[in-house]
Image (tube, rainbow over all chains, first blue to last red; front, side, top):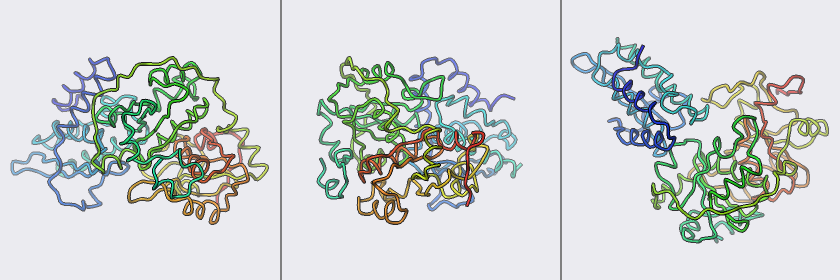
Length: 140
Length: 289
């Protein structure tokens, strides 16, 4: 199953970039589109993404018209990779029907970051996808 | 050298520099600043003006074998940095300087001893609102010549560790307490990177790497505080050979730096095979409390 359309488009465009530096720059640019969550600190522990070094929290709710309202807080100014992933996930499923979140796949981490990440960081980012999917599934 | 760092009583205070020292040496042509991170997006997103990136996977590791770069690779790396034999290399990075210490350690295998760690790492520099840039340095490259890699003085291999165990030698396990006791085979919240057995190397003392750090700002504790932890509480004797290990050798390079440079223990080695080798090897002894 393809990713939600905006994510699929980004992944495909990224796959055409051969130069590592250009790929990294595209991901940094993506991270700059990250919008912080509108929640006050301290963030609740039950929204924390397990295994993410960057202290990442996610909330998934429904809008009045029954679509997804996703917010992700990356509580670490050095969490560039987490911000990039948060931005693309949000772009992919925000204001979409809840079942759209089922199209998120953990392979997205590798499609975006490839072999550039350590195992530890990969796991944290993968867990962000898992948590958002689980939170959305609870609403569906 | 920073007066504040000098006042902490370290054995080799020149191997640790403050953020202030780095800020005042940004234009020192003999100083080469190197950022080494776990997150590959960090350096390209911003870095200390003039700093180069040394990537632990792409620059320091052999791309096929589980090993480090060879002499030719190190010469190419140093030449890219524009380094000479006299260059003072200052490392900093994310994760409380894990990867900075790891890079520092690899550089010692090639005998480039004029190296320092920037105390507090990247996050301290950021928190102090010091300048960060995206521009890549464009200093002239050099023609660095290096000796063959020497794995005998700073690096321990499996068989040496086994012999060390049989002699009841000193070992420092810098992993989390859960990893040490065998409750888990990997760091809390980290994936299992394939260790089949849990526990620790027989006789090892558990001193998690972060014990050496002030949690408030990521700087190293004073020599007196470190001595109390490692020597008085854990009984690590400066006179005896010590081998530090973790899971893949990055956290233990941090403790290797503490023992060797901050406390001045003369014979400390880093076992980079660490638990991912020991916990998977057939027939090696394992201890569980």
